[in-house]
Length: 107
Image (cartoon, rainbow, N blue to C red; front, top):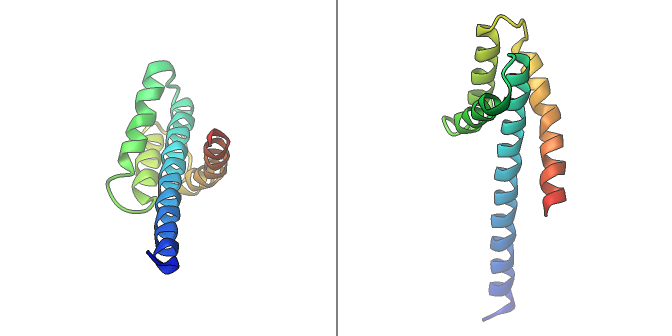
């Protein structure tokens, strides 16, 4: 095996780790967003946990954040809470940093 092959395998392993880390961060962000939205809607306890799982699963509908944004904003709007899509997006951005810190502290 050559140094080039070893280096290539090292890059592949790093890429795989980075992708796994990114997946965990996004899933944590979505869970936190679901809990935040549940609180806004007056949902707590096991129902809040269930809702947060629904938010996590909604991210598998389409690539990107739009599916999560649409779900959470739509649910908040259905409750008449007056939060805009921009408000939800700002919370998503804030929680992305929180999720990243939480995941990195778990490593």
